[in-house]
Amino acid sequence: MFHPARHRHSIHCILPPYLARSIAQNGTSDQRERVLRTLSTDSTFRALRLAGSRTTPSTLVTRPRAMMVESALHRTIFDLRNSEAFPGTPVRFEGQEATDDIAVTEAYDGLGDTYNFFWEIFGRNSIDGDGMPLQAFVHYGNDYDNAFWDGRRMVFGDGDGDLFNRFTICLDVIAHELAHGVTEDEGPLWYFRQAGALNESMSDVFGSLVRQMKLNQKADAADWLIGKGLFTGNVEGVALRSMKNPGTAFDDDVLGKDPQPGHMKDYVRTWEDNGGVHINSGIPNRAFYLVASHLGGYAWERAGRIWYDAIRDSHIKPDMGFLDFARITVMSATRLFGAGEEEDAVREAWEQVGIRVARSGVRMPAFVGAVTQPSAQAGRAPRA
Image 1: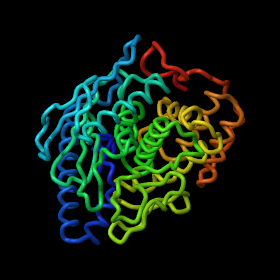
Image 2 (image 1 turned 90 degrees about the vertical axis):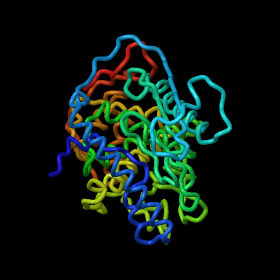
Image 3 (image 1 turned 60 degrees about the vertical axis):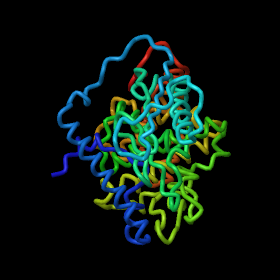
Image 4 (image 1 turned 135 degrees about the vertical axis):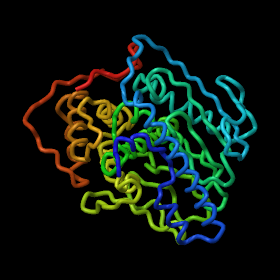
């Protein structure tokens, strides 16, 4: 029997199940063999994490936070040397010079860029807000076509060189997976149906923002693609997903066509993929893009702050749907910036994707500065 609470502890993989299914149906014998091996490995990790969640109920309890913190980036990169045996060999620690292994360098830099984004923009000290050391494991397995966050660590495959390049190649993929840890720590969203799609969308939002900050891009200059560069030249596609235009990222004989909707009228009802978490995330993804593009400037300055404040709101519920989350983003916009352009932009964006947030007639006072600068006080900002 499905127990949604346990799905909060799902392993989070960047490769959507519908892509794997398409490869299994349409690929060559070698492609099918590789993807089935990848799926088998992913299922094993999910089972192991599910078993762990049953024996560690304390993970559902919010930990007390230290009152005073300072930035404390601690990275360790391990080389699994194409085995599946953890922990592998540590090959780079915090502050060490780069090696000649590009996957090690990309993983190390990606962890650092993600940490720096959350610290510099939101004053958040690592994934858990308490300075959690960041670990990445590269060269996992043979031709492993995935990357995942399992609640403790990042794991990267090298790809097969046929359909997929190495999975450390995209900064937004690294940031996407680490952002699952932030969402899991802050907002108890079950990994199922609309709550799970929100979980996925939050990771796409922060993954894109990390890359935009790294490239010093404003909203109008960003491509809003997730996983650009992950496909090899053999694939007809530009990325795994498009936040700007869901459903347009790829259209390939082997991978199929991007199934993401960008509007509630096209919402996909399915039991696959935990109720379509990677599919229907296109709807809140486009809502965020619309907010960011309307407000302009650097997307993390206003749109990003609103979404970050929203995921930390005390009204977040484990089974929250799109409409309730949309209401919270409107509340967050008003709380952070007062009634005005930001609130209107958020309302209009949700309405453009088919979700109407009714006006309550109650205006909340601005709470500007709640998370505007890194703060000596750790942990969560004041909640609604």
